[in-house]
Image (tube, rainbow, N blue to C red; front, side, top):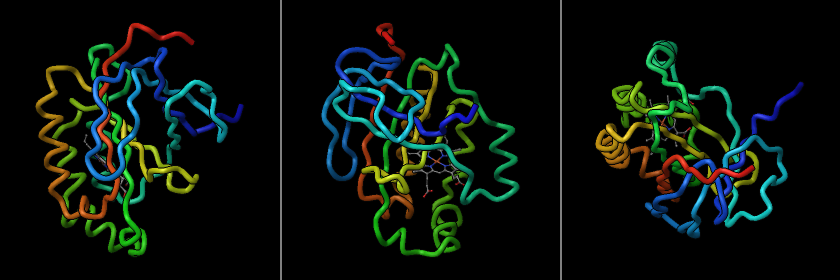
Length: 190
Ligand code: HEM
């Protein structure tokens, strides 16, 4: 069976596997308020009909990680869906035209040599479980949907991590970023 690697993140006011605590625009236009988030495998068409907003992204191969980094990421990797990880963050991000006009090696330089994105992020593994979705190539309002799950004990570490990344050279190329915080919901109706 061929399974879609496209996922739909639907904000709605009825039910969802995650309850939305806050939606904070960090850079650029905001997203409307919603109470719950449903995440599900989808095709290009929306599954959810009653959503306030619906964002889609697909899983893909690595672009920038080099062999040694990839190995460290695999060793420290944390699975999503742990019952102790009751908190989550969905951070949709768009990068500007200047970023996309760069060559791959120039982007890698900014991403890692200058900004140390992976080196910094690795310090927070396996406390933070993460998954990156791409969406630039499917006509979405963002280029990436970034997803993180963690236990309440790691709230401060997560804040420190996002604070650190937002000071980097890489972030100068971000022209839209929304920080959505969530907690596992008791109101999940299919
Ligand atoms: C939890 C620790 C983190 C680790 C270990 C980590 C690691 C990585 C790695 C290795 C990539 C590149 C994948 C590739 O080779 O294509 C990546 C991409 C990305 N990460 Fe992180 N990251 C972390 C946290 C974060 C956070 C907190 C944010 C947002 C606030 C974020 C936003 C992104 C974005 C937007 C990309 C895509 C960049 C691009 O392709 O231009 N990451 N991350």
